[in-house]
Length: 456
Image (cartoon, rainbow, N blue to C red; front, side):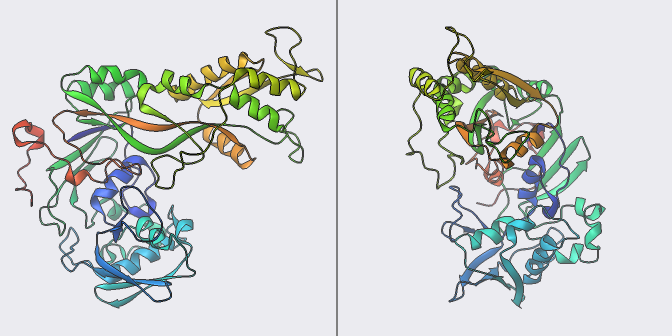
């Protein structure tokens, strides 16, 4: 199976992985002790499935949990997985010299001890509903015997971390930096041989070229197809679109504080009546249909709907242009003449909307928001930026910016019809990649590597 991606993985060493390709490859090469359920429930251990640990039990005070390692588990170099690997993995994930991206996420864990060669005990500083999730989801288990002699501060640059020696159902076969990364089935894996022989990620920076590769058969999977290109995939005899949930949601944030004096409210958005008016003036359903068609969903708050605790029964402000105008009138923002920009104390109801130039959907939403707010007498200037958008956006959030919840995105991939996927999870479409199949009579040359039959 061939996948086109815009960029290479920066690393595949779990403590340092942060990009999408790195995560996808990491999930195939390395294992967690247990895997979260597909509904992503993070409370307790209900729904978690055994991975490296075939069972576990809690202490009476719920401040420790003992994980029993599957005795059949082996590293890709043939060495057995041991409880000491779990202890070592925790140590490097928390070592400041290693600089893991998830250190803050596991700060409630006190330590890991080894009871015997196949039993690791995780100790917690305090009881938490998400204590089990904190450890098993954030920490991938890595082989101590491979990395122990490398100084922690050198792990980020060591060539050894590029070898990808893990316990996952795939092994790393080849990695040509910036060009190609290939994994092949681990035929002797303790969890069984994956149903695909190999998976290849090809780096194609140009989005148009990547889509062309899917359409001409050079690629089998493209994890994101822009909304305005979906028709090209759907009209293909060999390809189809594949919607799947994501952890993304979009909102229009309001900056509440004055840009020049953080102790003073913003002259426009500091007024709750104005914020409500702007929200009620936006036809979110129409905008969503305009940009995403059937692939977007209404957002109900600061959470993606793919999470188990998402609440879609919350009552949102209605779309009501006339009521929005009344609210603005009552807040002192009045039209000097019909259709003109509203004013209050000589100041126009004018503000900028910052959005990333690199995101066509966000730019499209910006244009629609600009037009809809114009109808109630607000002038919106689109501030399309490149490069530093995320820093500016995060700063606005730090400055306390309530929001209009716009949409919850179902990402749409493009996939060759001969590929038969299973569940695509919101936290990573590739989690269940070992269970994807290609019927024998539909396999092409690149699908056949000759690694032996799949275990039932």
